Length: 355
Ligand code: CP
Image (cartoon, rainbow, N blue to C red; front, side, top):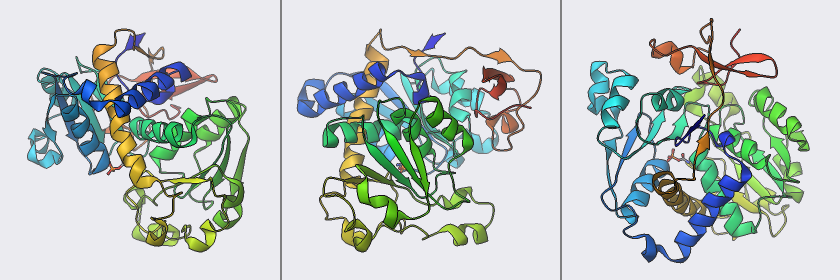
């Protein structure tokens, strides 16, 4: 099966990801050539969850391509507040717009929305699950700043359990040859096991570390992340985790001169502000690279007939997904779509195992 929706970068091969990066770099070199590339086209940004970068960079991307934007950033100002289902909202908006960018706090929502969209749909973050266009941002940054996407030692630090940006990034960089990973977190916020499975399946070496000071010394890239307060069950659990890993001047002095620091942002306390002027601190530049990556993605989805994203084979499961955070819990009409992985039945929306 094939489609034009970007739900998970996992569905793309290295050649396809490289094509987006090449396109982004071409746009950066001569932005004027693309000023009218999307004349007459409309992007709908449906943000059911707060955002600064993803929402505004998508809007800016479409405006810079000559298109226009519609949408909401507070669902309570839309008919969602009257109880409108995701299916109905998407069915209507795909009749207005040429392409949809959606963020939602519930896992699997982008996949669910894509079932009812007649136009390309892009996942801009679904709960703690995935955030593929942040990964595009990170990949474009790495390509421009390090000149390669392979043979790197990559440290990821912070909330590796709930951080959807980290999950998407590790899954994608694991596809490239010779990358190794240092997973720096507390025991409570370790990466989910399915990410470890992916690293092992791809033959990537990885270490688990509980010390940023120790891990930082021989990295090519350090990816810092925020502790995701909104995903904790109680304020006490969050308080126990916040500020455990803080990148400060003392730790940075132990790093190599050519290491780069990325962060998907927003930052809370995990990088001290005195580091912002260090040439290795690239997180603000990274946010700008993201806009070019999103321009490239919009163009390829709308204009390149060969740019098709493959879909996995699904089947109807007898059982319903029992992940309490899955979109199937709140949108009751959704079919019990599942797929097989390593002999197990997985939910097609949230990628959790269905028992
Ligand atoms: N990195 C990122 O997703 O930022 P926003 O939440 O501001 O969109």
